[in-house]
Length: 343
Ligand code: CP3
Image (cartoon, rainbow, N blue to C red):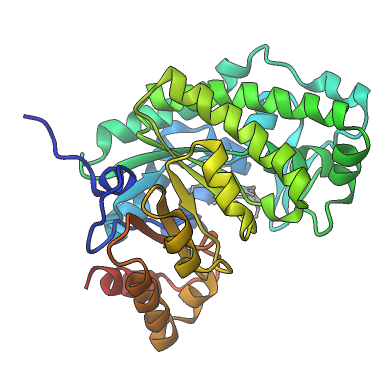
């Protein structure tokens, strides 16, 4: 007998489901004591991403606790530059550190040789997850979008003003294009492997899409994403793809129309009623509760949840946050959120 389609896939096929399917960005992570326990049992954070048993376990922890409609592979967007040969470390409490790429010679560290062997552990996690998960729970694979991963590769760390990466993108676009092309190519292989090991949906995280002016957004966010999406869809026609151009504002419309994604994840600052009018029902909407409302909890959170459900009534929709869960989030607030969404 065929298993019925998981609600997340039905929503991405254009169905409006009351209540909507729900999952949360960064649903696995430091806000959960059981995550911190597994995290303490490995050395570096990337070791956790490359341990299929442990990565499977931390992916499943929030599914067991809350019964989300989707599990998102536990890994990180910086697995790709690491597998390409750039040095990536996660200093405790400080975020990622990379040996920055600033000039042409620096790109010599990047190589596709050994890339597949390096990311194979992540594909094994995907495979073990699909074997373990109930068929009603969709499995989401992911990668960072080329622009966002490139910001870390050029800046060498998280940034406030993006001076180094913008200087390269605006001042030496030929060099920056080389980095973007390498990332499109590597991300394609990485995501194709995730699909072939059991991922049913892919999310492309473009966390820093919102820092670029319109013409540069077209060139560095939309254009590479469009190539990546079209190559993935040509290779595996059934695959569903959600784009998350965080901070894009009204440029989310051009992003949706031009890239070929199936769903658009909205950040908390975006107007849901605008998105319903502009993007529904052609694109499935996802979002967009402010993650800090999940820290706050109580009536403020419940009002915001009700507003989101009210605004998206009748359109294809996936409930999520506008960005990832923060470590300060009380786990019981996530339970209350789930009860409110499914009430
Ligand atoms: O549950 C899930 O959502 C799946 C796992 C996941 C992680 N990172 C785990 C993680 C996903 C989907 C990501 C994506 C990611 N990683 C993004 C895009 C989404 C976003 O948040 O904007 C970005 C920009 C990164 C890069 C990254 N990884 C940063 C900046 C940091 C440090 C800051 C932080 O939040 O800790 C990480 C580390 C990281 N990635 C942790 C986790 C659980 C915490 C590290 C730890 O446990 O020590």
